[in-house]
Image (cartoon, rainbow, N blue to C red; front, side, top):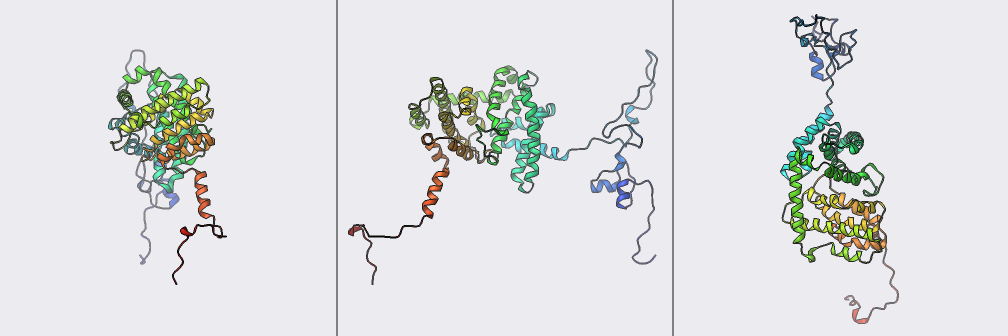
Length: 429
């Protein structure tokens, strides 16, 4: 053999097509050859035999042998032994498995602070996802959003996955809102949480007013209503089922909220200014009552919020309970662009800002406050001075005036009108 010449090898005509196309030796291992396994490529040995009428991924059930009535079938080979090793198994969706793994090991731990709620979202919610496709879609959508936030070079890809799963799940869940019963109420209630996570996580990507706009995220208040309706219609089933601990914990926190409101000193209540402003409003009596009730519920939330000041952080449920306690009529006022109702919502942004450490809420308070500012007239913008101060946001009109003042050159001096005693000293000679 000449130096440098290739070592001869046995040629075969029965190797897999992939190896033949790559012009490499196939070891003909079944059900996949070693080369295909090594390079993670499909091996045609997994394909059904030529001439088979079975579609890929499906196997034909064995044909039962004919027997006379009452006669037991003869003991032959097990039906499983008749299944050829070349039967093509369903392909694994690796991206969905990645999203589910990320949700169960990471995303679920970022939604709530309470350890019991973390366990529920880690264990119970995925179990519901295996039973209900739309719940699993919600899980995968929020997980994809989570990865997109922290993997910027693949953000567009994961965002497309998130949008695909979210829209599919939302369509199915919305159709079931009118068909809630004891068998699906848990799944529908769990899914009603996902639009809230979605809207806040994607707030920075849209200019739509989150309370009024027509985007897919703008329906979050409708789903808050839907969640409230689910709670009222299936209260007993939800409390008795696998989500029972969640609702019992919520009831405990709600009692603490009422107690905190009872002990809340008036001089610490930030809603006092709102009450004063409402005294000058010209709303019809019904609208006035709805706004005043929303302010009272806001006062209760602030009482618990400030009562938790010594805690490391406020929990999601303690803050968002306000959305579930306000009357649906108040939410209708927001949709009707009622200036007073929108201004009241700005105070909620102060509590929302306290959750800015959560990836899916970060920046939402400022974004929402900006949109509220844009929706208010000049008179009602004065109503939200306190939320603006607390959040530290600078309105665009104020910022532009400040920029203009900085960039405008000073006028050339003319005849001095400065009193002599205020004149600068003459330069030393």
